[in-house]
Image (cartoon, rainbow, N blue to C red; front, side, top):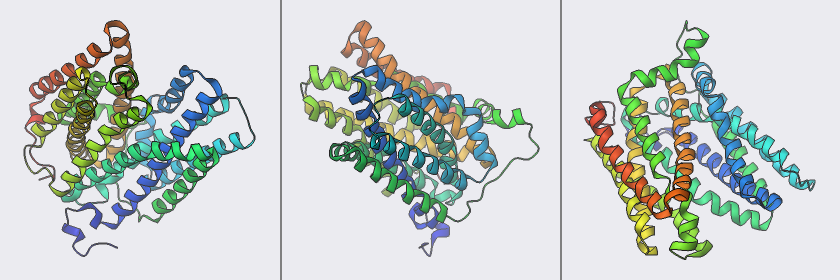
Length: 409
């Protein structure tokens, strides 16, 4: 039910459309995390080959890069609510395919890769529309709250989804897939229950102008360019997550349970900051606080790299998650405020590719450097590099550094 003061409320949950959207997104994100964990177990059980797991990630990520010029254009030209619903339906069909693959007792992994590729296509078109809907469901005064809670739903799914997926797969792969199917159905139903979300379409564009508008806007708007490139290089130099198994096994000697604690620590830090920001939103010096968040992420990476204490290492990972959440909160809000609605889907598509590329390449950077100079030096170099990026970008993008408020005023 819409809150009686929704028109002026800074609380995103007082707006019925956002509440339905948030719950639908939570169900869909949770379902994806369950499926990803289940497929990881399944592929490794069938192949006993770590490289096969690398192909799982590649199949999911590749469509967003190949289709980046089109996914955002579609999000800006057609009704985003229906695009999201159709993409969730396609993801649902893929999970039904995984269920069927297991049900018939198939041992080949090629059909799994094919379904993952289709799943990646669905997620490539889903992301820009899902992201671009947010500013049109709440007034500008509630946008920072909406961004904060949207990030929280992803963090909750990222923390809880893999754990739930592992437990369900331990019972049966069909229980895991069945749960994901039910969550996708609920997500689709809630998304279709949304009222039509208003959006602005740009008229009279050529096909090339339409598909390239996202890149052109990013590279001509200093705030958007600075925010996206800051995340790209900061995460590219971070990459400690890829080396967590080495820390859990050889450096901190924690075992599999300890690895789970290490992986969950950044999310716990992020959730704590999300709850804080939802209660005490940033009202001034937003740009400086974003750079401080990136600096804290780098500092946490540096200390984690040299730590031999499990408690300190977990605390530093939580600090990394907290710093990253501050950066995400400010960056995503500034990007949404600085981007006109008629290109918001295309800019979101570019942003998502950059974020995905930085995560994938960051892990590759960390692994390669670890092989060349050692695990600890690789993480330390990444932490120092991230802090240097924060200082450099603060100097290179004064518009970003001087950004004050996140309510559009």
